[in-house]
Length: 243
Ligand code: NAD
Image 1: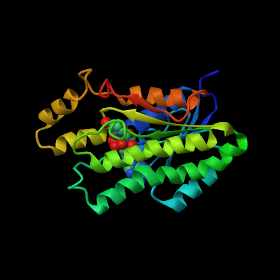
Image 2: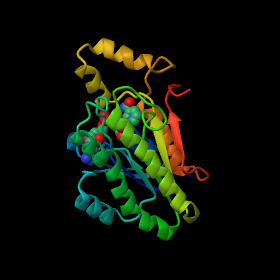
Image 3: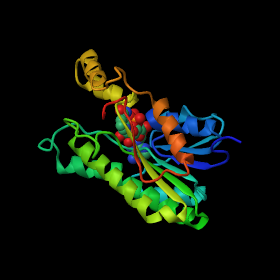
């Protein structure tokens, strides 16, 4: 049987980037995947893929999240992948930026975790994977204040959930990538004016001399979904950035 045979997996922000690659990787590992996002056009690119159902889900919308998980029923694996990158230092960071970052990068994860945990606890089985970043408590990164603050909170949330339910069959781990090719990274590079220079600067942060691929991160998500002796970990996957 496949590594994740018939496991029901929900992925947030599965329309593009790491979330999309993960939805495909979970399905390839035998799972029944719910790929969710707010971008219908992006979700469309997954339609017809074996093992994947797509559904629009805004993780900022509490009623929509509750309704979605109510309809889905059993969830074996939750991959909280939705997140947003603000640029800027603490002086640049507005209250609005910090609120938005906390709402999407942290509170939305709390919301989905609360929705799946009761069922997981009943079955004494469940894996939760939260998308953090090396830019977090793992490493200070210039111009990523709101992002770093909230991704550090993701690691705190992950360890807290792991500690509370370690004896109840629930595992909760975080993924901490370095710089990974994705549509939003592309737009951040374009927004800097000189695309080639921006790209070279991102690559120069990575000691391996290249960016990561969404598929490399997806492999870790699949592993953590079935890693039965691993919980409470902030797993780095960063091309050597944090060595
Ligand atoms: P991305 O940023 O290109 O795509 C993000 C997706 O999230 C989009 O499809 C978007 O529609 C969706 N989304 C936005 N708001 C949403 C909402 N309210 N509800 C549901 N979906 C929503 O993808 P990415 O760069 O692969 O990033 C995915 C995750 O990985 C994020 O949490 C990000 O912080 C994290 N991450 C990315 C990198 C990187 O270098 N790309 C590095 C470390 C961590």
